Length: 307
Image (cartoon, rainbow, N blue to C red; front, side, top):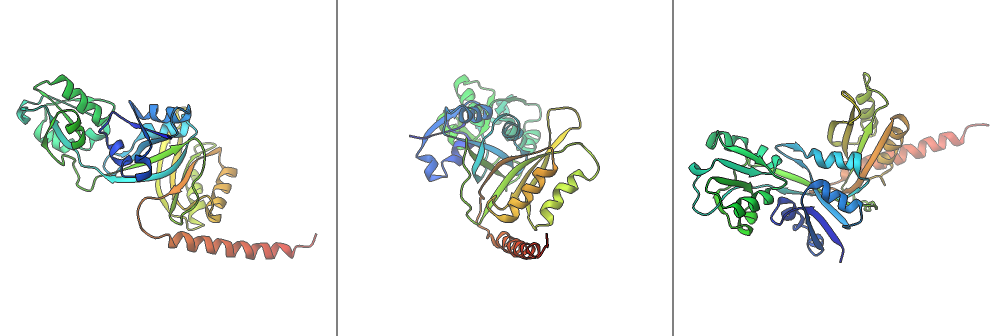
């Protein structure tokens, strides 16, 4: 049976999001201790697929996932999954809020609960662990009367903890985006797709980012996400992570990537894949039709050249 690796142990948001996908839920589930371990397992052919968070509506990007995909592992995104996040404050049985002196959780989750912690537990010690479920497991195993975890209700049930408070995240419209990755293969276009790339500049100079963005603006390609990250090669040396609407099979997308590849130091292709959500693909389809019409026009003009 094919396997899918995800951030464990059991009870994480990664597992919760993964199980929303019926085809993935039927695979052999492989919980691993960290996101780099998940992506390494796929790269080393120890797992067929990997599932990892890339972005949160409150805290922003999950940098460990982005950096591993950009600089360490040559994997391709197969799909994205977006789920709402509800965080619970979990304690051993009988522990009250006033008793808590230490809170454990995944740093991205803790950051989503800053207001709750500052208002209700301003002097608490925050302990970083590899996942929200790992925090619940540790607190449950230790059984200390002064410890709590921030995680899922499912993790609390799995590790013998009680839900002291629910929805402790700072903002109610909290969502996390996950990606499924594989060693190779690009899913067929669906008409509602995204393409993810990383752009590396020859040098940091005025207008370099504008030059990249103009390739998409000229073709009416909408950008869903743009973020700069250090390249690890020196202070001030940055690359750009870009999610754009459309598929590499679309002529306008392929044309923009071709131009970028020819002008930049490098372009890393992270995948073209079905986008989450139900909104229609009409803008992408119209832009592709316009590009094809323009291509026919220019081809006809070039036929008239006398050599």
